[in-house]
Image (cartoon, rainbow, N blue to C red; front, side, top):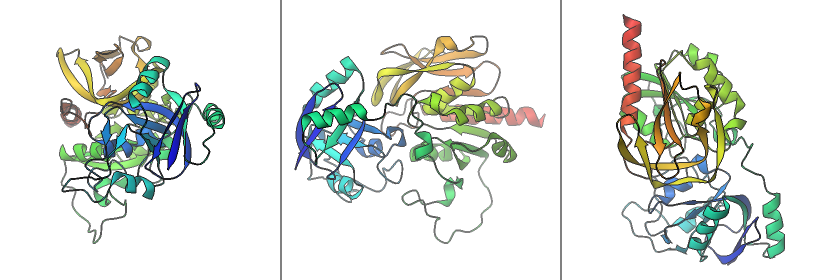
Length: 381
């Protein structure tokens, strides 16, 4: 089946559909990861976006039930150079194409993704439309130009959980309560509230592996209710959209600053920066991939990181007497992390759980636990 990808700049690519027959609009971005397409497709941070993979062959290891970052695909659409339907992997339960059709996700293959990526790098991320129905170039370009801009768009409210839940109480593939659930004693060391702005499952798994008992709450969950729960720490998750549009999140974080240890990543990092009086801005084409070099300014070590974001915190907008810049992106010099000089608060722009990606930054989870331990010791004195 013929499919077309039209961009707001007037460029139209013709290829072949390997997903659901559909017409969708979204912001066209690219990801440089070689593997991990299933984690990318199910990452809520990609809500509203058409993701282009720069690696040319996609689909060769199929789909499985263990590499989901949420219960379903979150992307608006998917673009690859060559889709491989004949998957081979001992964990695979089906093909990528079948899975995309099952979840009604539009996908196109057979286009020049190298050309598309170079265009995005030059022009910037653009609005686009994938269609298998309307194949008129002029119509599709007009539809792309009428589609929503990412700037000013609050997508956290779209992908967040509707009700609080304990991570240990749910089956992550269905989010139904686990069968034969029995009351158990809390054997974990730290009670952590996770603000779900679009949290990935592997973030929750990594926090759990470091001894955290997690309660996940909606993006708009009121700060006073969090404090009533008396957690040992608060985690601000990743998520999609423009951080400046998530005003309720910024206000809640302001109420929590100074009350509990806080660790933020990605959108949570940006919201924390805004809550501390900083500003954010939209990047030209964003950082998306599993190979972004970041310098830790405290240790002078270089971390290869997994990233997925289209906005960044302006470090010059933060008060240097209160905030220390801790990490910087070596590709473009943008901010990748900061910490409060007096309060137990820190955040990074990238994904320390690295799904997919390297594990260079896993130490940040231990740093969060150390902050909670230190806070607990100070209170106990």
